[in-house]
Length: 334
Image (tube, rainbow, N blue to C red):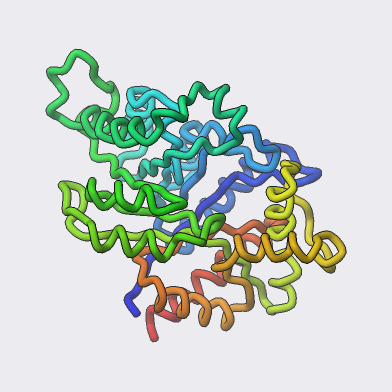
């Protein structure tokens, strides 16, 4: 089993009885905490029209987090590129990289990050997404290139800056694209685990070296809930279970506090659907987390594990990331 980095995915979760201002302050607190724990990067994801997620203005929030931290890499996991002009994203991330040199990542996805009606409001044309997304990535690479200095359209700031691009995926489609372009690949195993194994296989087998990357680099994003005891971890994980149950029910309300028994809330069919979506979620005390991380890495052999922790109590969320760091450090010494 090879060693791996650990990182953070934060969706800026909005909690019941809390304001969005509170959400952003908690995100900054988490970024500071995980920076001190030597996590590699802190990513924020673009979602829209969801009362439970406040990271819609992703570039703005990245600036807020980067300004409040010192060393941890901060970026998008990801920007849903077909929602935007390539030039605007190049300028936004050129601005971020100019403000925080050497610390900004640009993760890119093709999904809308929302429902169909909101996707229309964002101006997307679903008929051309599969052609538009690869073309936009090439446009970004052009805007960031020093060779674009003589072009009629330039990204200022952005031009000539070394801003690493990452391709995000929740199916096998983007695995092919990341391999073809020779870019690092991040898979959304935290909500779409079904095709993760096949996506990694495709990416590794078809990877073509590029100027950015000479060999495959894989990030697996999964959910994780750690606590002092196994019983506490499973109890506080009911916030995560309720969040996925709400997705199944198309109920986008803010995140709820833990409950004593999920069987009082979900039906057997709903339970099966939620647990399938949370197939690779790591829940437990430190010893259990360490064993589950080891099993995951032996199966997938990733370069980086990105943890998303939906825990209602902020202090317990901070403690969860401490336990994940302790478990990863212990594994690296084994």
